[in-house]
Image 1: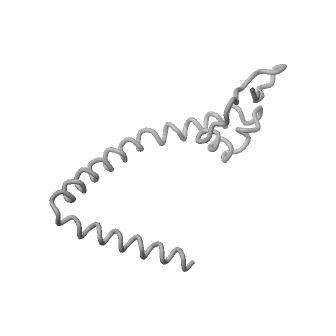
Image 2: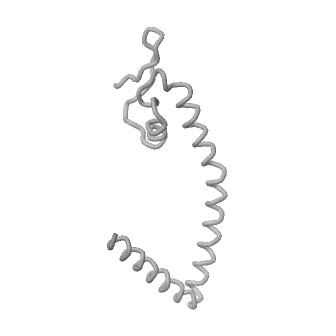
Image 3: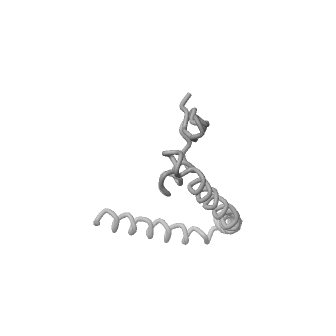
Length: 101
């Protein structure tokens, strides 16, 4: 717990130092640029986070009885984020399975 407190204190000190640097015109322009880019990034995330969550939902709904990688919500989310190499889906006797290369 002490390590977390020290990390928070260090973060606040660095943030305070950065706020004092805003008095320099070039740093102030960078802060304005950074503020605008963060705002645009948040709009971007507002569009694509629901799309990603719906993709995980549909993958879990469709493939959870057939594929081990989609059997739980956590595994479905991890399969959306992390891709195993040479992993593909194939039909084997009417059952959907994962086939490794």
